[in-house]
Image 1 (cartoon, rainbow, N blue to C red):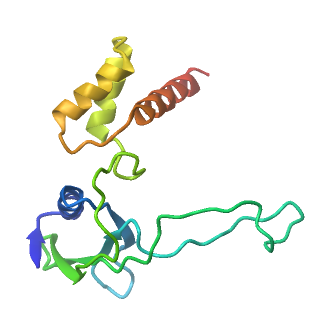
Image 2: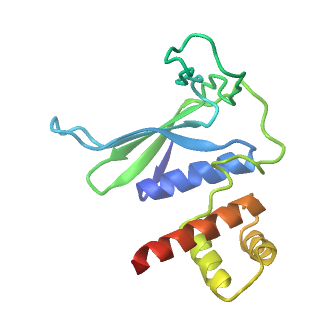
Length: 173
């Protein structure tokens, strides 16, 4: 059990500890206070928790015979953390519901879609460097130098640059 000053501090701490240990921690459920005056809650879990739900439909409109074989990283991992507001001063308490994983830790988090996301600060650095005509390779090196836990790839850099260009063009019309 641990106390945090804000919801964001709790989430950032859990994700950082998970990253150091080779796991990716995601938000499984988040509940705002409702009419019954319950306090806000937050449930964090492993990115591999849950099971794969196939929603594809074949060309003839049925969901019977599959088009192709698919895979998923979901394996029903039971790892769960729960955060609750304590008192009236917006402090959050973290409680470990289940602290074990049913899969091995990743040696390298490169290629994990969630772990490779850029933060707002990293995105602003990327945009500034792109405007100054810095090569994507050098942008990635700079981001990794500033944050040793950054596991972004070149594809992440290219995608972020493209999203920014599209957003910029949308504002012109």
